[in-house]
Length: 454
Ligand code: AMP
Ligand code: ZN
Image 1 (cartoon, helix red, strand yellow):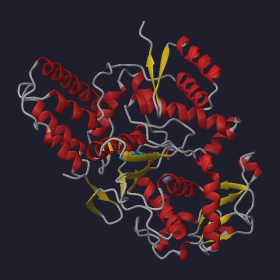
Image 2: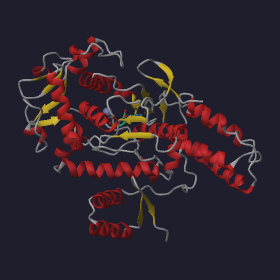
Image 3: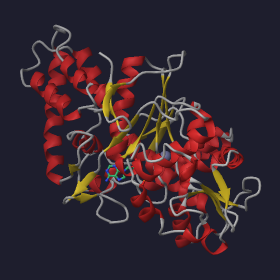
Image 4: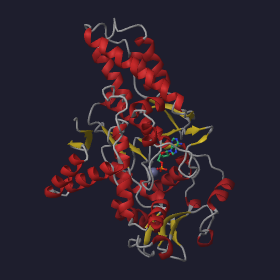
C-alpha cells in the first residue's frame, strides 16, 4: 500500500511517488528561523515531518529519501534580534541552530539529509533574481531593491486561493512606496544601514548591495540541492500564504517547470484556543517542559496524538496521558522480549493508518488495540518497526534532561571544527564537553549527545 497524503494544491489525498528515474524521493521541509528557541508548536510540524520521513524510508528504502530542511539565518527577525542584542548575526544564528539541533535530537527526529543555511546560498539566490529580472518577472525599485511582479505570473494564488483584494491588504503595510503594485513582494532588499547594520552582500546585476527576501531563500536552496521539480514540499499552514505562494511564483517563472508535485501543510498547535507563537509569547519550549519533569519522548507522543491536519490544543494533562501510554508500551515490549515471536502482521493497521494521510491518532489507536490484548501473539521485530515509524524512543529513560544550551553550543562548535578538519580545536571542545558531563558520538551526517554515566 503506497503512502497517501493530502495535497494542499489539488485539495485531494494523493499518492506520494518519486518522479525521477533514480527512484530518489525529493522532499523539502521549510526549516526554523534561528533567532529564538523553537517552541513545541514548531516541533509539532517538525515531528510530523519526521514521521513522514520515516514512513518514506520504510516504503522506499534507506538512502532513497533526500530530505532537505533549511535554516533561515538571515531575515528581518534574525537581523532584528542581532541588533537588539548588539551581537553579530552569525553568533546569534549559530547559537539558536545548536539549541534547535539539541531539541530535535532529544525529540528523536532524524537529521535531514541536507540542512542548508540561507547565508550559504546567497550566490544561488542572486542568480535566480537575475534570471527573473531578465525575463521581466522582477524589477528594480528606486532604492535598488528588487521586487517580484505578481501580475506577471497568472498562476499566482492557486495554492492559497488568495484573492486579489486580500493580497493588497496583506502586503500594503510595508514598502508600498517603492513598489509598482502593492501585491508585489521583495526578492532583494537594498541595504539600510540603520536597520541592517553590517549585514549585506553584493546584489543582483543592476541592484544595490543588500540581502535576500525570505521567500527566495527556499526557492534557491531547493533548486540547488534537489533540482527544479521536487516530489514534496512541506511546512506549517501559516506558510501557505505568502511564503509558499511566493516560492511557486519565483521558482516557476525562473525554471519554467512545476516547483513541487505535492504540497503538505500541518495545522497549528494551540494553547487555550489560540495558535502557539513566538510573537504572542504564549509558548512552551521543550526545555520548559523538561524542567517540569516531562521527558522529550512524552512531548513527542503528545504531539502525535492529534490529526496533523487538525488544530491540536496543547495541555499539560496531555503529557500525563502520554506518559502512561509510553509506560504501557515499555512494559509490552519487555513482555514481548520474553516470548517467542508469534504471527506477523499484527500491527499492520498501525502502518496502514500512517499511510492513509498520516493519521497519527488512528495509528496510536490501532497500536493500543493490539497492545491491550497482551503480548501473547505479538511479534517483537514488527513492533520495533512500528515504533521506528512513530519515532518513539522507548529506551530513553523518562525524565532524561534535555541538552543544556551551553552544551549544544559547544557541540555545534566542535562539529564545525571537525568539518573544517581542525582536529586540535575539535579535541579541545570534546574535553570541554566531557567536563560538562556530555559525550558526543559522531556519525556520518550528524552527531548525538549523551550524558556521561557516572
Ligand atoms: P519559523 O521558525 O517561525 O519559520 O517556523 C518553523 C515551522 O513551524 C514552520 O513550518 C511553521 O509553519 C511552523 N509553526 C509555527 N507555529 C506553529 C504552531 N503553533 N503549530 C505548528 N506549527 C507551527
Ligand atoms: Zn521555506
